[in-house]
Length: 363
Ligand SMILES: CC(C)(COP(=O)(O)OP(=O)(O)OC[C@H]1O[C@@H](n2cnc3c(N)ncnc32)[C@H](O)[C@@H]1OP(=O)(O)O)[C@@H](O)C(=O)NCCC(=O)NCCS
Image (cartoon, rainbow, N blue to C red; front, side, top):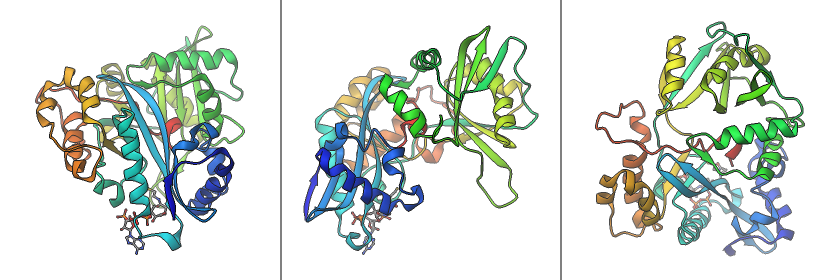
């Protein structure tokens, strides 16, 4: 068995085939759905074990930078975690993940977002995290755009629309630093623009000028048959009143009966608007889990806003299994733990907010 190791460009096809075999529900589409993950540029971060010339276990890593509410941070996403059935239970995925954490730690990455919350991740110190509000809008509950606003689903993205969307996103208090080529490849790959489709991009204009946009998922019946068809907003940016005004349009276009909108706790303007409309809200967390790595780098940023976090620092190296418990404690203190998602901030300490690690960023 050879590994853990990254991949050279000529090996990426075999790794995509492995992912397609394991994630059968994605069809044969893992390479198309995750173009930035399965790219030659990212080959070193497709961490794998090989049996002869066949990859048998994969941990996909994609690195990015975010502006958090406390300052800039290097983050990574972990996804496409899979081992061929005949090689499972031998510690391969665990070894790949530990190796990935060590490498990310060495280059100063502070947070690893993981798409999932299974034992494998929890044992290594990842935790559900964050406190958000999830609003539910029912059909007919939100008034349509006033005369000065116009909301429409984009069929073919023009250069002007792309630059407006990029500008609005970059103006959000928390966001990923997304390169232009990433926008161009990820919007269609994730189905927000044709040819993949299913999801959508809605832009809202005032006097012809784009003042907000929303990315939405595909309408789904998430619970038992007969339950309402729901549409989730995966991302929004720009003027809050324009975002709210687009909600009825999304419901109308998609045929969904209700709509879910996740809002950061600090987004007071959005809370005021949606509250005035009488929308119901419930506590929510970010999707998946987070593993806090490299506490030194994390505290350089977070410790300035929350000096109390400095006291939680322990001697244990955060990149090891021994550091897992400390990472979990620090995660709860910095972000609010997943289990107390509904709690109010009564102690006056601000929680760190990060951009949602799903939607366009999901791997
Ligand atoms: C999850 C998965 C990647 C684990 O890979 P692995 O190489 O077997 O992992 P390890 O040997 O390091 O052990 C970790 C897991 O194997 C399980 N395991 C232990 N012994 C096992 C055995 N004999 N047979 C099967 N699984 C076993 C452990 O319970 C643990 O799973 P957990 O996360 O539910 O606690 C693999 O089962 C898989 O590919 N599953 C399908 C794809 C998937 O669900 N990916 C994760 C998306 S979140």
